Length: 271
Ligand code: DGL
Image (cartoon, rainbow, N blue to C red):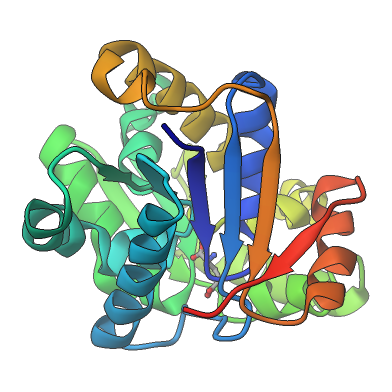
């Protein structure tokens, strides 16, 4: 038995962990942030796949039966290959899940005009993962995308409340709605974006639904564990979380405070 692992390239996945812990407080969790190599958003397919695979192997080694890639870039570029090619060779009993599929499944219940917007990193948008997944499940839904390369750096540099943040958030949202003013729902396809939610709400046209991943992934994980008792029974339940980072422990502690609003104990790890 072992903890459920939440992996992100950096801090963003903490927004997902936060919601998962609120939804499923009894389980044990390990959070791993590859802060030394973040951001993944602009990196090639090969590099994101290699880094993500290293993290997954480490989390399996640490005893986790189930790894959630709480990073859109890793989910877009590495998840499928890990699930299809690597898992059968590593351990058939372990599982790796991502954040894109649960967000896409939410689409049908929120859209009325069948026009969806997606905001994400360059990597996620260029991978076309969202349009491809949405087309598979809901062929009538049109998808419009906008890459927001400045949003993650704004969060990582604690600038999410600044005028600079207003400038870039307005610019990207205006660009998205210039593609189609009838978009009725927008997926925040990056785990950092919930930290920008107040400004995002300010610039997104009134009445447009915003799909935030933390809540969606938490609900989907709960459902997954109910449907897969063979995995659920391998998950430890003491309600504790351990945090690991590939960067400086002090830096992580400080930033995690912003994301989680609590003091935490962090350990350094090498991948
Ligand atoms: N966590 C990543 C995501 O959700 C954003 C940060 C990065 O580029 O590594 O896409």
